[in-house]
Image 1 (cartoon, helix red, strand yellow):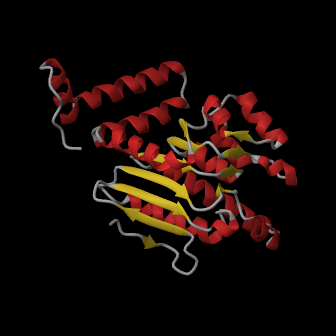
Image 2: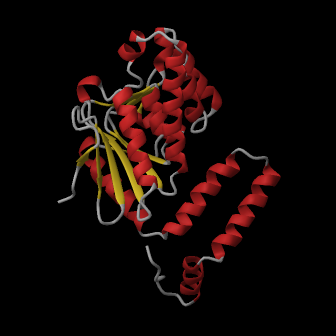
Image 3: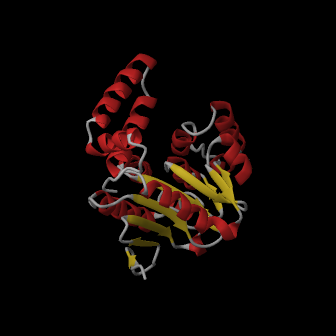
Amino acid sequence: MQDFTLLSPADALLVHRRDPRGVHRLILNDPQQFNTLGEIMLASLEQAVQQIAADPDARVLVLSAQGKAFCAGHNLKEMRARPELAYYQDLFARCSRIMLALRQLPIAVIAAVQGVATAAGCQLVAQCDLAVAAEEARFGVNGIDVGLFCATPSVALSRNILPKQAMEMLLTGEFIDAREAQRRGLVNRVVAAGQLDQAVADLVQSILAKPAQAIALGKQLFYQQAGMGLDAAYQLAGQAMACNLMLDVAQEGVQAFVEKRSPSWPL
């Protein structure tokens, strides 16, 4: 059995576990509030991601949720209770730190989306490296429905799907289903609800079969070059590949290919 540690014991908003293979799982566990990113949830998420970043044996992070919703964005009741600019600035700064921390993890981050993901919840899916969704899942950035343009969600969303598709979602607040999210590039795979766990497990296993050093180097390069011009991107990518080839895992992998055998490397 895998151990679960409640990072917020009083409310059980987030459950964190790590198995012997280095797979971490963060579970949004506040279904009555649709797993909104309230103050407790944000604090728990930030703490959990920091712990994973400090784990040298971490290999994969799976982010999932309990209940009908994956995440319904920020907690509007908490936000309405404190109509203060400084409070709002701090709230969105904390959320942005979490999103950036997920990107900076040197491991694959996978969202397992079983239900609705809206506003900052959709942002959370977009911020993950990979996403698997159940057929029932829906995605939206509908803050505009309450007069609030989803500015921070737009950052991650516009880096997943085409600009006009992102703007349509942001300006209309309309939702898209899981299949459309896959077509637009927001999620990788769509499966029946009963197959979600297995689909994620298959993806995890595929990643675990690859060397951690190469994945860490590749993830960093992938996102760094995306914000560069073409010349600079190729220069950086070439340097990354040269450094990658100097790693023992790459030398073994190439040698195994030449010798027509399976590579033997530390996973």
